[in-house]
Image (cartoon, rainbow, N blue to C red; front, side):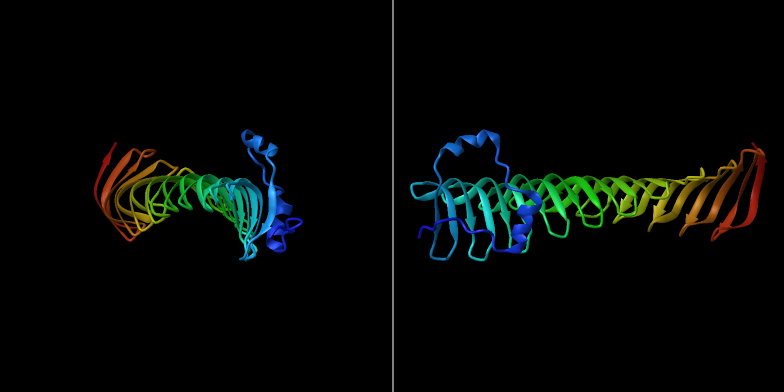
Length: 276
């Protein structure tokens, strides 16, 4: 059935998208379609509505489509299916704008949610795949590589508290080798597992302190060297964040080096002392 005009979007969520983002911006190279007459609007048996170009009575070219449930698509069509650049708005206000095949994101495009979430980047089979950027309502910002919808590869993550991570991510987790810069100015370079320091790394404090060694479960654990601003250096064993076991303490100002034992961060005894 042919209608006199294409209906206004009755869904308020769809109306908000048009108010916030305006009309779809078609590519300049497709401007030749402006010279082809649109047909319709047509209303089908399922109460869906289409207005646009047709070829052999099939949607083909450029057109807009109102689904029976109130969802809306506007963009390019090929042989009756959405194909190419378009904008698809769901009834809840979520919408995608970019390249698609049969309403599935394919190629470059952007997804927007009414709560403020945005993804802009590459897609494959309706999943984030390739290079992209996510921005979350709380201010978190991620730029990285995605595989089948999951962040996997190298990423730059900015957290709401002002800290940032630049490095490897595996299956959406901060795992691998990377660099953390914390909101208070402290920094960590090294290996991480599920966002925690694990393996070899270097931690720097703003006052000049430095730890270079092994970590486990986010704390100093294993063998490592600790440097204090006053010139004292400890090289030895650590356990659960504390000096524990055998170690060598070197005081560069006094020119003294001592070997000794520590337990849970407390010095127990010296076993050897010499000048350096």
